[in-house]
Image 1 (cartoon, helix red, strand yellow):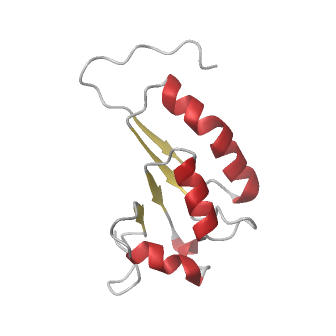
Image 2 (cartoon, helix red, strand yellow):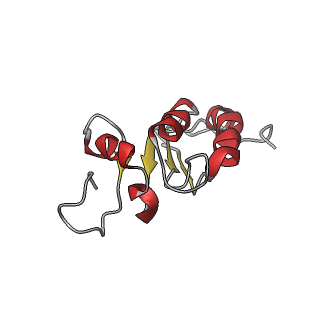
Length: 113
């Protein structure tokens, strides 16, 4: 699958957007495949949706967020399930963490858009 990749033209940027890594199986797949895909396709930046990446597949927590980052995610996007684990709200507020909440949520909700 990864052996027939076109060479990236000079100056080109490649982005990989990965939808919904769900629970432990999603984290395991990301950990196994994303580093390989990122290298093979010469991906410059990768965003993974992690809103359901907690072990039970509901919400995101610090452990699943760190696992996605370790798998090579340059940023993690979320959705309405981001609020399930209160422990994670601090990461949403930390401007140094490359994680965002949905932009269509009201002003005053934790996190950055």
